[in-house]
Length: 170
Image (cartoon, rainbow, N blue to C red):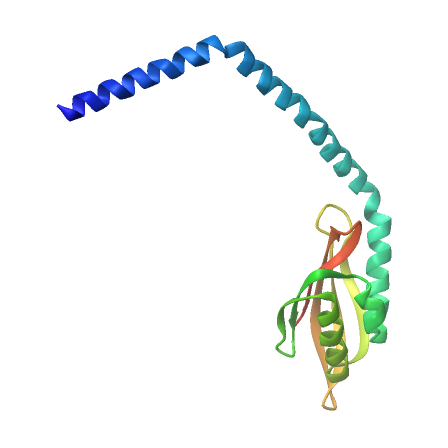
């Protein structure tokens, strides 16, 4: 008995909601139209940003050139200019994880002391698109022994400029 009462109540409630929707259909259509019109400029801006990313290749090449020079010289100050607020490191000395800009400075300062740079050169750069990256060969000396490591560096936009989001040296 209670079950039928409950079903009857649900049906009446559903009918009331349908009546409200029928009476206010034009208002609902107007609200959805306004929401759609407000969202349109955002989409246009998004596509404009994609078009402008095609013009970033020279900027990215310049950044990768600066990063290459900084690593080649073991210059942590020059390299740290491009660290993002949270940069991921995976280094051959066992350090891995996300580090703030200040922490990253000291991590690389120690890394360059332990793994003294002999030479560094990017052999592949992808300086277009939304996820630019570069790979290269890092030749270093550690404990009197010369070794080679593969380097991977990726960039993303942050704070109005391109920042390093990941550095892997293995």
